[in-house]
Amino acid sequence: MKLYLVRHTHAVSDAENPVRPLSPKGREVALGMGRWLRGNAAADITEVWHSPLVRARETAELLVEGARLKVRLREAAGLLPEDEVSAMATALGRHGDSLVIVGHEPHLGLLAGRLLGIEVGGVDFKKGAVLCLERILRGAPWTLLWHVSPRLVLGQE
Image (cartoon, rainbow, N blue to C red; front, side):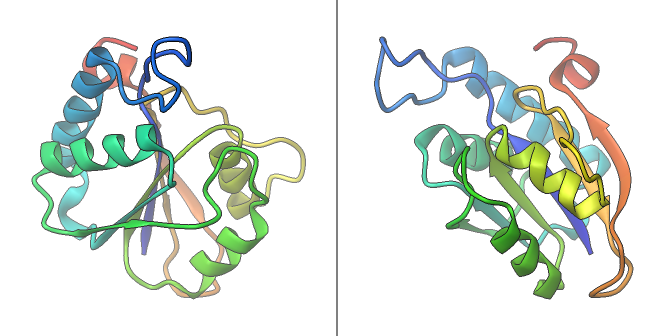
């Protein structure tokens, strides 16, 4: 199983729109990261989970569009920025198919840290970054395969 953790891309400011949809730049980056996934990693993805916040849902939709995935998008509980990571880590322990999770900091960084056995802190996620973990069997430890940012992949942040 592969797990792709994705931080949402750039959203408009709270002053512009309190719902905080993606900015034009954020939409462009999400599509670009999806295209990159299509060429590098998307073949095994069966499902995409996202937080209830608009910026995460829109990032997930554009990522799926860019990667040309034919998968189900699902709003998942436990993915808000300040949510505890234990429940999501437990749910992933039971999950067997490769999936994408689109969420927020600090939650994603702490979740990645928990899955990798990092006791203090976690992994830093730039907006639009994708981190890929792999586990050979259910219950086996997770391994970090790669972590890319929009700057590395697209030449922009």
